[in-house]
Image 1 (cartoon, rainbow, N blue to C red):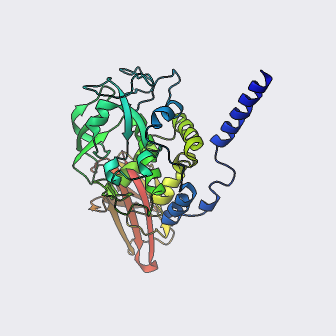
Image 2 (cartoon, rainbow, N blue to C red):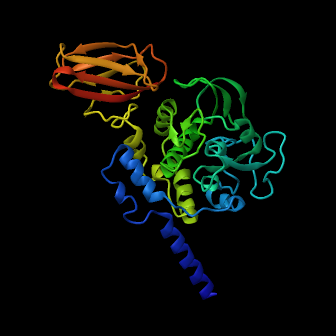
Image 3 (tube, helix red, strand yellow):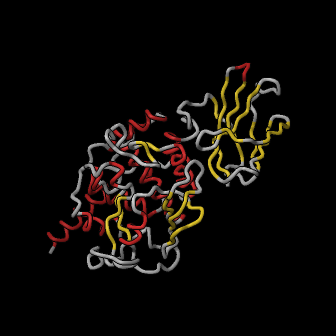
Length: 355
């Protein structure tokens, strides 16, 4: 009995210790930005232990279990509310289905057709999640996005329809707001884990190979900001680490996303020389820029770009050492503000979210 108890405690201790990143795990990424940071993180999480596709059914019982023991399905769950139905591990595995609530299956949240059904992507648990089989089928391999008018809505409010996100107008699938950050960080992981390993990937309307198209990049950054890391994601990250021997850096360090794709790396893949201070951010109508000391009204060029790099019209009013930008007429989304001081050959920029 004592030996059994001792073995259990040792196993628990080892498992708990392994759940956290070891000391120095992210040290090679320190001080890096942009593609240099993406490459450093890739090298840290590369060469993970690939599992079999069949073993996912068992692994989900560790990685995706609710506190009540049911399957944590982000396509049917309603956080803080009562889900329309729940699945039981094992007995509710798909199988065939004809409608919602019939069974759960193994969803490639990054559709497998985007990487040509290749390995080890096919069983990488950081983008594989248990979901309602019917909803999974309706999602198909459409990109994630924000739906304008829905052609179909699931029982938990996930929607299918034409994209309202600036930069893309095709059909997209929109998960609940409470899980948008989860899927965004899954995608950040995929773009980094398979950085420069995507030769032959067909891609999609959302990605070229493993890298985001501008509209998708801007949207995912917003999703990640508006739906921050949850305890669910932390627990899942720790559980997968014990299985695959790698982690999702964007759960451990959410700031890495902006450090790679955010304000100092830019839509145009060139760093700003100086970052502007802008507030409030996000903004509903107007935002205020703190102007640099060398600014004067004769030497500047000010431009606002949409998430797709298209120049948009805005009104700039200068008051002392501040400028007010009127964004009232712009649709909700992600914008890049650029201020060039011509006499100083200086470029300032900032990103702002319009509510």
